[in-house]
Image 1 (cartoon, rainbow, N blue to C red):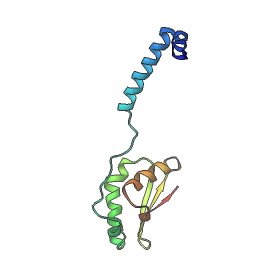
Image 2: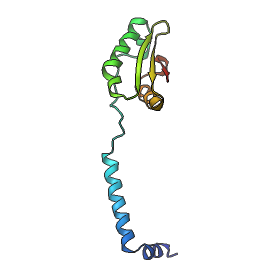
Image 3: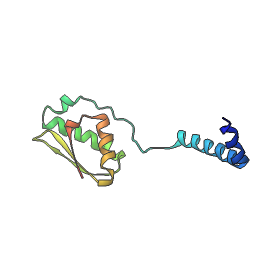
Length: 116
């Protein structure tokens, strides 16, 4: 029943100071740590618009190259597949999942093909 009291007696003041220090450092890190996630990109048009023809998918590719790709690490190259109306994105192996998640956060998956 007195586990709390026993715990405090065992760790003494040094343990209490460590707990307070970890709490302060943890709180500081929680509010200041960056996850290297770029801000969301609001596309001008919908997926249906971009799927219309080769020119509209090229328009999306240009938007991505200007506004999205520069802020994401791991994209090796990208190109348009006009016959399929999709964008092919070559990504380094170690960044594949991160890049895919960032892009699919703002766009539909049917517009992209991701390759390692």
